[in-house]
Length: 181
Image 1 (cartoon, helix red, strand yellow):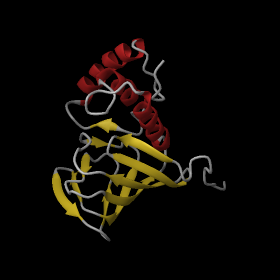
Image 2: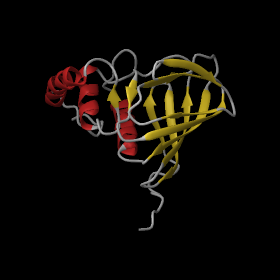
Image 3: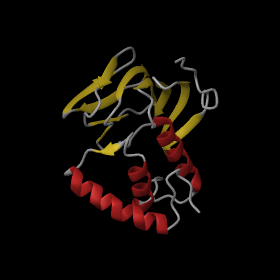
C-alpha cells in the first residue's frame, strides 16, 4: 500500500500553546514531521504517547528535556528520542526561541491533537495562562488520549477525574476538536 503525504496539512502552522507552534513538514501514516518553535518559559505537563515514538533534532536555541525522570539540555545539532510510553517533558529555559524538527512515528492521531489545540487557542475561551480551562482541556485530553496522556497520578484515577471534568466541559460547550459552541 503506497503512502502519500497529506497535502492539506503540509505547510500549516498550528499554535499548541501561547509559546509553542508547529509547522507541518510531512504527514503520512508512518510519520508526522513538524518544525516546532518554543518561546522562552513555560513547560507542558509531564506526558506520554502510548503508541508512538518521537525524535527531536534541535535546530536553534536550547531545549531542556526530562525523559523517564532524567533531565538533560540539548543544543543545535543534537538529537534525542522519546520511546512510546515514556513520561517526558520539554521546555525552553533560555531567553531566545528554540526550534527543532520533531518526528512522531507512526503519525496516529497526533495531527488531530495538534489541530484541536490550535482551535482551542483560537477559540478565545482561554484561562489567564492562555490555555483552555480545566474542563475544556479535559474534553481534549479524553478525546485524544490515544495520542497524548498526562503522566501524573495513577492512570485509573486520572482517567476517572478527566471523565467527570470532560462531561462538565462538554456541557459548557467545549468540543473534542477544540472548538467551542
